[in-house]
Length: 338
Image (tube, rainbow, N blue to C red):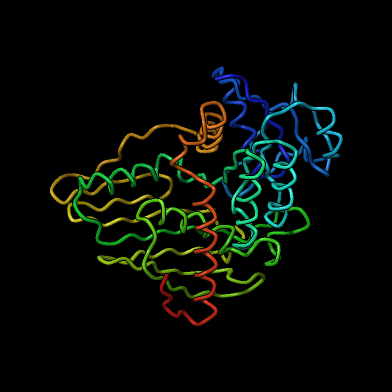
């Protein structure tokens, strides 16, 4: 693979998780190189920030140009792809701008705040002849890929039910508290719940109907409990930004099959076979952020047709499904056919 030069736009909390992926590429000799970062707040270039992904960790900035002015970065730096780690309400604007500038785009999730924005982003990528990928990172997470392999292979029989959860205190680390403004973040439903909504689609395809109930507090849909109806079973998923400030972020699942129950809890998977002792499977150590960026780099190098794992069209469909769940919640939990 020829060298791929990347610039990052926005250098807040999630960007620093992306930054560690580029450090991994450097260590392993993969020719994906972060050459510049841009953020309107110069303090972000030195700030070590903790978000709900875990403890804050230091990072290296040597050899990376730093900008507070995007136009200046575009004028002075040569790069092939931009990694957009801006707040959700800026995703469409800067994706369109970077595509028009001739750059491939990796954009953090969610794709945008509404279906119309997503369609505009898809059309812009097609018009520019550039690739667009949205950071639906659980599609590259070994703990969830293990579950997908079990479902697809049928080695524990048919799925009987699946529960997923993602729970967090209200995020308070964001620029100008944008997470806490529904019109900018979409609330917990579009920012946090979207991971499990996307995973339901990734694992099982689109449901035939959905319903949801929600509670509002600082944001709309700050707690949301969703159901996804399939012909043989129902999937449930819960997300919350209502946890007490001292609570640690928690995410997991419980999948019941004919011949086993599989549980992800406290970042550990345990398999409980119906006729054998429980065990913890050995999983790969892949960094999900690195793997999604690596796939986009391969697509740029080899051709877009190799991406069947994480297409922008699927990311747009996930936004549409979250919006349908919010509609059901606003209707008191009404079941809505798809």
